[in-house]
Image (cartoon, rainbow, N blue to C red; front, side, top):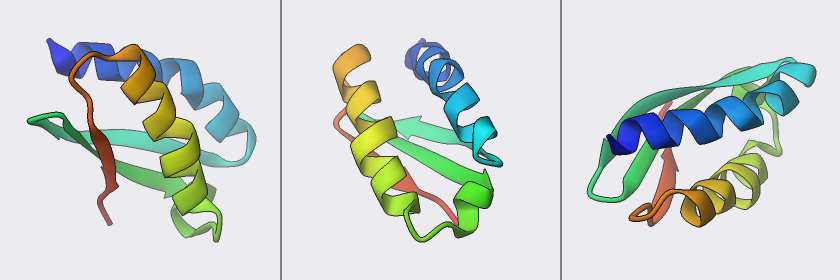
Length: 74
């Protein structure tokens, strides 16, 4: 169920990533840790860590109860 909530938040953020030539893929949710793969331009962007932590992680922690952290999978 938590995966569905995470996917809903990612779907809200996806248009912003797509606009910059990137995307995000949900890999896993385990014990409050979300593992994501940044793709396209986002995968190689020098600002990908900021996108992941300041953007995606912040939104997920705020909107999905139980989410503690987001990790990037390469």
